[in-house]
Length: 336
Image (cartoon, rainbow, N blue to C red; front, side, top):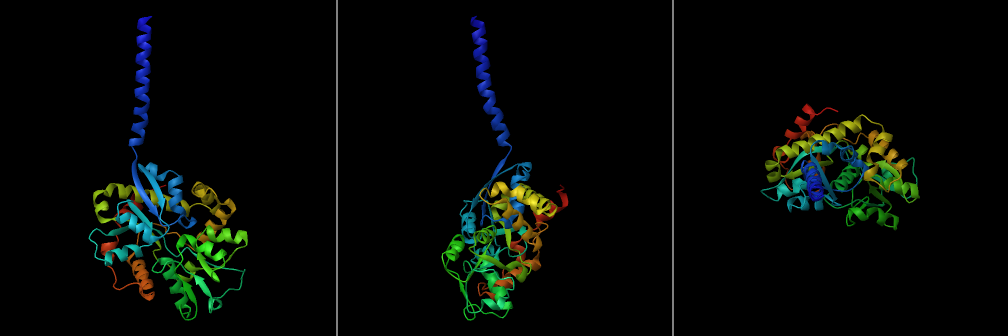
């Protein structure tokens, strides 16, 4: 009997030791990456597809996502070491580089290729023309951010001068723009999805124009990391880029209904019908980059937009701020 109890005790001890060890070994196969995203939007569907379809896990990555609510906040987190990778407009990296910082952020993968915001009015206007904004007030976003600069770019190309023909408000935080509009501020507001469609559903606002369709292609949102982090973690950056490209391929080959279903987990409070219509809207304006490759032509166009907005004192060097090493290898090797 004593031998029996000794054997039973030994089995219990082995079980207690074995179970945690097995769990730890599985978890240890994944390497954590802290990603700070500029905002949560269907505009970034390929990222959420990559997360929810398990593409990061396939690459051995456990992705920890936080939302910065603004490119300036994302870049601050990256530079402070609070995030490994930032996801925002590449203008933030240009500002940092031009400040003379040694360990600046380098852009390594592009996700979207045009502005993803929409001009929202207080009333439906199926016959909208840009001349109708003359004499009005538009909530445009943070001064110096890509959304606000792209809006100015579109207005000026239409012969409408901000500050003279139209007032563009730049003193309202990104996350508070929809609330300010529904609270009575401004005649128009630029909003991302699904916020714009949610206002439409509630009768609080109506999409009248796509900023991205009017502005043409620019590298709107990209992934970046500090130069030092990238140099020390090349294999990890490659795996991250592989996962992003898998997400891009998946989105390109699936319907808005399938995309909505795949990203639903990232938008638990969103109506599925809205997710479908938004995915369809972004497909129609060709918002998503087909690959992570970041071209010099698009980088130069971004700096044109920044110059026109009066936010760029000197142009930054593409070869220093952009690398396609990881994007090109992903395109060459990744298959779905």
